[in-house]
Image (cartoon, rainbow, N blue to C red; front, top):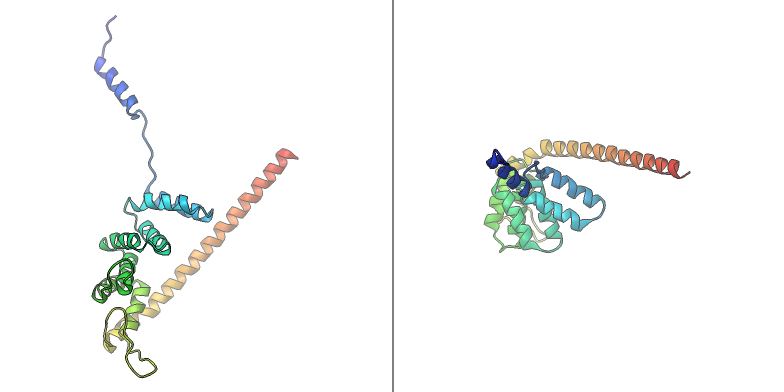
Length: 211
């Protein structure tokens, strides 16, 4: 017997062999980041770090910042700097601020007040609160007990005009930050209540099956 449509038959076999007969679902960086948060809640740091790396490798800024913070906490400052810099070069304000901090302190990279100022200013220009606070403070004339000017890690000299400019931004940014924190607290409370309710329902169901 002669088989018709041999080409179609072979194509089907190849597709099956490659596992292409059905679509393969890959997690998005947002989903990997959410899985990392769930692992953190279970205190499974190893699994959380794995998910963070998956998300960060897909260029998800929150994951890059979070893993940078983790590496900093673990005193792997060079890797932390690498993740912060990756986010910073792509315009992420948190990444820019953290790069500025590391250049200013000489952590994970050679200390450079000039580069610390450059990255801190880039972050502040995006209204990143802590960066704005740092510039407002750095430009202010802060004196020590002997009346001398206290040096700052950005290498900036006192400048009242600049101090006033950045300081004027603070009230609005601080209000927005407080509002965001209140919202986050409400969401966290709601989530905790949902988890508690789900646990209680599961225990009732378990008891109903056993009792």
